[in-house]
Structure formats: C-alpha cells, structure tokens
Length: 549
Image 1 (spheres, rainbow, N blue to C red):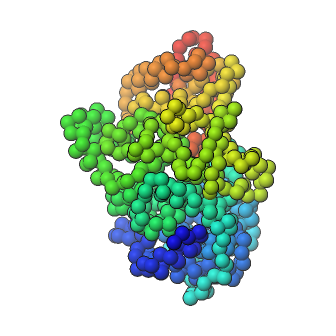
Image 2: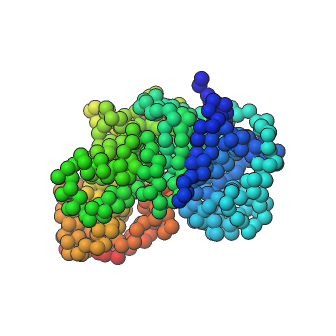
Image 3: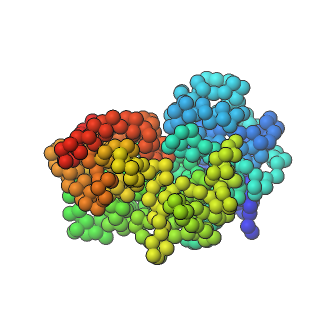
C-alpha cells in the first residue's frame, strides 16, 4: 500500500507492529526505547492538544539536540496541521531572532540545546514554550507531559494532504539571511522513494541520527526514511560520544559531510600513531586492518555510505577506499533532494553520479545545473521574488555550476556565487583547487580567496598532525603541494600565497554554517587583508608567500 503522508505511515506501522522498537535514545547505561504503538499514541495526544490550543497553519519551532522527542514533536506538529521549523542548536542569537520573527513562531519546543541561554533572550513576545522531557526552563512554559495529558486518547481532527506545507527548512545562509524552503509530505517522500527504488535500500534498516535534524538531509535520510521503511533509529548522546555510540548501532545507511569523514580519518590515524604507521599496517594486511578499523567504527554493516553537502576532496575518498569503505558522492539541496548519486555498479570519484529515477537535467548556457523532477519544493516562504528566480518554466535553478563527461557522470565545479574574478578579470572556480590542495596531509579545512586580488591565496586550517609537526616539514610539504596544484592551473588562477591557521573553523566561530559548510564571506572578512598583502608580495617576488596565524 502506497501511503502519501507521514501520519499515514506512522499509523500503518503502529497498527502493523506496535511493539517493534522504532526509536532508541542511547545513554551511558543502555537506551530509552520507544515502540511504534506508544510513539503513535504520544504523537496523536500532543497533536490533539496543539490543535485545540492553536488551530492549524501556525509555525512551531523545535530547538533541541537529536533525540526521540525531536521526531515526536515534529510529527505532532505536522499531524495537528501546523508547520514545524527546526532551529540549529549552534545558531547565533541574531539568526535565531531572524527565523523566530520571520516565521511568526507561536510555539517553541525546547530540548537540550547548547545555544538556549543565548536564544532565550531573543524569544518573540507571547511565544509559548514547551519543555521536552528532562529539560527545566526558567520562563513560563508548558511541559510535554501537560500536552500528553491534555490530548490523552484523542486523535487530531486534521486530515493531512500530500501537498500540505508541513515544514520550513532554512538554508544554511552561506551568504546573507537564510531562506525558508517550503516542504510538503510530497517533497519529502518522493526523493526517499526515488532513492529506495534506484538503490534497493532495505526495509527495517538501522539508522544512526547524529547530524542536526534541522537539516533536510538528516530529516529525509533518517527520520522520514525510517517512517517509509519501518526503520530503527538510534540517537547518539553527543558528538563527543560518536566513536562509542556508532558501534552500538552498526547502521545500514550512513551519511556524513566531508568534515565528518576527515575527522574520523584523523582519529584512525591518531590511534595507529600517524600516517606512516597506518600505512605500514595496511601494507602488511590491508584486508585485515581495514576490517578491524571498520568494525571498530561500527561501519562494517553499512550498505550505502553517502558523502554530500559540500565538495569532497578526492584524496579523502581514496583514503577510505584503502580501508574497504566506499563513499558514494551524491547531490541534493534543500530545494531539490535526491537528484544525483553514485552507485556500487556505476561510480566515479569526484562526480556526484548520475540522475536518479525520473530526474531530468540540463546545463544552461551560463553553465548552471537546472533540474526538473517530482518532489521539489514549491518555493520559499514569504519570498515570491526568490521563488520566481528559483523555478523558471518548470526548471529549478540549483545555483551550481556543472559539467557532464562522455559517460553521463555529473561534476559540480562550484556555486555560481562562489566564483570570483581576480584582478585580471578572469573567473576562478575555488572547489577543484581546494580539492587538489587538500591532498597534503597537514591541513583539514580550506578556502581559496582571490576576488579582486593579483594572485589567489589559500587559507587552510592545520590539522592535529600539522600543529604538532615541525614547521619546516609542514612548510616544505605545503610548497610542494602548491607547486603541483599550480602546474595544472592557468596563470590567473595560480596560488600565490598560503595562510595557515591553527584555529579550527566551527559554527561557534561562525566560519562554518550549522551544516558544516564554509562561509566564504567570513573567511574573507577575517583573512582578506592579509591575503591581499600576500598576493602583492607574491607578484613582486615571484615566489609563494606562506604565513602562519
């Protein structure tokens, strides 16, 4: 039976296998478990209470780390005919203030959130707070248990339709204020099913929820996929327990942006005592060491391992290949999910793969990727002008530059807005250059600057090994890397300077978005003046300029 709304799916599994475990909040002692039947009853009760208090069509915010009650609150909001809005727990107060006021939020569900002390000071007047279990609030509030009691034994009157607006998902805001992308039952379920039909992902799969649920990928790949296929979801305790929680789950499907794969790589290398020691172990027994590492990570039962959300250095993908883990690059965005991906049968490193299912695409004369498919967003909330720019003549404009090879594999060459012109007036595409530079073993985060400069300048963050190694060794390796990169570039794109930073980029220092994408304008603001100086010096001396900060 094909179901068309999320509450239909929840009802189906609650009726079919009420005692089967759906959600597991991992704890140091074990886990708090939620079976399908009781979970549905809680969702129905809270939905009924929300409907009785607020009616339909209101925006309701969830601010919490990943946990079972994130799902339950989300589905209660949707089942009540209201609209859920996820807030990242790393958002600065200014952005939280913008989202809360722009959406005219009536309710905020509050769980454990590292930014609550800052967000609580920008709450709109009259907003109703609901404390999720285990959370204490100083402000006047309702508790989850209050809503449960209020709606106990009731079902909401709202009858969901596939095209109902169920959620607003805010873009990462790499430039300017984030946009609220409208999501419906249809725009969430179509991409999930397109992926399932193309790659044969199993029913009753195990999922591991650790990336922010405010991001569309985690919602679709974990939350809504579990609803579509009766999956089991394990919620990690926090990013600091990732290494211990992941082996307790052993997921069948796993998604991580490049930053996560780089952090895991560094952790593995550190345990072996460095790159050289790991390589010696692999040379002695590649298959055995690879199996040992993947079992230790809890990734030995993964059937599809997706890397997306940002450009992935090919060197990082090849490194995981040596351990026996195949990272599949793919492409989707908040406005159009599940469009392209690699498969085990058809894969090219550096490419985001081929179209999935009914996806049509073309490349505009300006080199922009356009897509046409079922399951796209209807547009942006309260922004008809941006919506008109996004969807034209039935084609969704992704904002990504792309090319296609002779075998039909799609390659993204950067965001249109990230391209820049040097002082020579010629365009430079940063991602391919950043990817090549990332081959060096001493840095982990990269951003190429050059807008209006006489030379491009790479800003890079030293990884743990790079911070501990001799500066002379690192500098020599960086110079060799730049020489290799520049040998394949046109003169106007060649790197003239490198800035090495010891400070890791994070959402807290606002250089990364909550979805771990680099905010180029923040890098330019912090390092632009130094980059301009290094570029001038490189032109004057004819030599690479290298500066540590």
